[in-house]
Length: 373
Image (cartoon, rainbow, N blue to C red; front, side, top):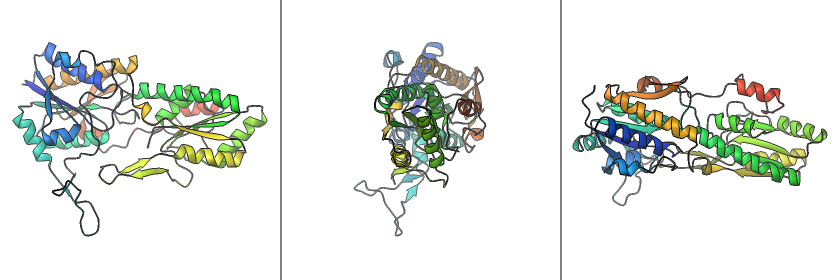
């Protein structure tokens, strides 16, 4: 058993349903089974840098299993290994060419952990957050990674918590626009989250009986999509449902960019492809088209039963891994078992993407779904 007395837990990157159940499982297992002290680091790496630590007891996690978001808050702008330099006014410093000036302040985070007497750091996050987790492990911090993304695109784990909840919300959105599409004989386009991976749109599109599914991995020809809808109209179907990932690409490889945030490690913000597709289809098909962007409602709300159970499994397994000294590793679901993999192996790997010959793509096409290819 590892000589662990006091642990810390933090959440980084975008929030998602299931974070609170993980926190709850970690705290309850650590305290009730092993008698450990537990500290929460608020606002992700921002809190690690500024020492925003709070004690977590059983009362703090008693009623959070059904709550979305994270009681520890989060941030996706704070990479301590590449931290924007700010002047006395708090403004970001730029060089003579207008480029942001960065510095490595990770030693401050390491020192804050030492001052607080933290023996192990539990990091809940996706690829970006866990990349920093790996880097802190290289600096000697006892890190345990817990995978988090509603996109379900992390390598080495079959499912991440939050995915089931998010696709449920997306499917409900498709179900709801179907009735107005039927009533007004419209083309209803629903934009679903998914920057580089189409798992959410693929699952929701099948479950929501979409006529067209557009995902980042399969570049689409808008003319083929229009042909599909025209064919359906000729066969008596007066409305169409189109599910499109926010990161869907046209044949030229272009994605629709909503804005750029210079102060973020991941500055590109995608969004608006749903409106682009709807406008083009209205022009090509001649039927009224409306676009709905589900946006952050897919991240919010109470996690499903599946996600509550999966999150609890991850949290428990993470504590067990720490007590066995399995640092520098990430807990992962492989098949029906929770196991662990090295962060060194996870980070830098290509994300888990939908392949054109994936079983779900094949069955959708067999049922007449168009992917625009």
